[in-house]
Length: 240
Image (cartoon, rainbow, N blue to C red; front, side, top):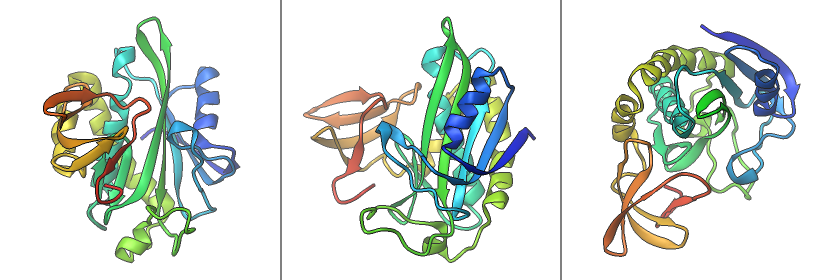
């Protein structure tokens, strides 16, 4: 199991893990009891109340992963988290980077990377899992917690251990065999595939995941592939 740094408070675990990466540190996990400036995709904030969730980031130094393949780490983490949560409730994966339960957002992920030439030097993969919140601000209508969904009171440190048990073999598999076997595990857990979705104002049906993780969908009478990037995907009738 990788080295774990547990902090009382930090601006963001991704920022701390990135500092470790730039200092040349090896693979590790950063966990904080609270984040004062947690971040999500598209520069959005992420509420990270003290001891109410697993606020964590992985510093990865994958072997022989090309720059354009770095995004595969998000699928590895999402699959691992769903497997870790399986004893407590049915978690599903909303493309490209959320884990949902009961049609609401349980976890968001944020990946950043540094490159050496065409190869990936490091990946910082952050994730915030809502665990013990009994309620959310009305400004967060799509948020939920494991407690609200299942009644389970799962401690952040316990989930961290369960997650790493699932993550390590999938991470090794990804480095050895590429993204294909990971996506085979992701597809049955997808909350997006087969659903009507809206992407950048266009409506269509999500069909499949391409070998690089892009979303294949039917729109305007033709099949297209969409890379995650800055794209936001929403179901027509709700968050998923």
